[in-house]
Amino acid sequence: MRSNLVRLFLILGAALFASRASAAVAIYSDYASWSAAAGSVSTLAIPDVPNPPYYNPPTANAAPITIGGVTFSLDPSLGNVGLYQIGSGFTGYAPVVTALVDVPGGADTPNIRISFGRQLNALSFNYLSVFGTNVTFTLSNGDKGTLTSTGIVFGSPVFDFFGINDTSSFDEILITAPDLSLSVNDLAFTSPVAPVPEVATWVMMLLGLVAIGGLGRAWPYRGQAVG
Image 1 (tube, one colour):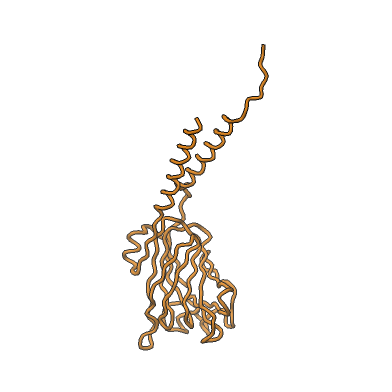
Image 2 (cartoon, rainbow, N blue to C red):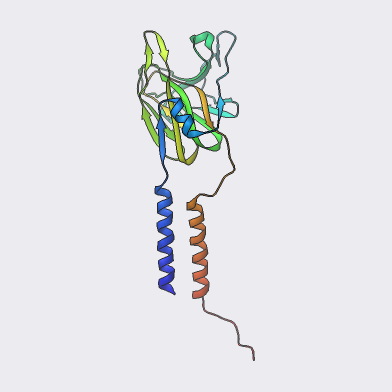
């Protein structure tokens, strides 16, 4: 009996490992390929700021910005960085959320944390680091990737595309770049769906039931004979 239990634990453990190993992440640099793989998505455009000075807030800011239920914030461990919603009247291009270092040339790192308040499996947006430094994207599930940024070319900003599809769900992304500023706009992400237990969840439940059953069989019977 004990050898059978050990055998079953080994089989279930192998299934748990295989389910975790099968998690896959794909990063895209063009919208067409990403959207074809992501399927139906929700979109979020950064609203314009129509009045002077064409950005919010008008003074240095480190407070979160919430748009359409999505929260943009800063990682305070990355230094003194301001966070702004900047309109087209200020930049001449589409509205953005921008992280800007307070003191250029220091150790501070522009960063934007985007929190969705729901589990996602696919996400995309346009991004720009002003001097074209590489941009790193870190998901709340630990998956990450780095892409190049074109930056500003002949005085005009060139936005690049970041898209990710991940079989392991996430609810936040932290974007960082060793630059003067970092901007994002035009978000798209998977619509929320009813959560379905992953294979790993079922395996853990089965392991627990098997363990309880094994303990029950091994526990000495303390009842009294009737007769």
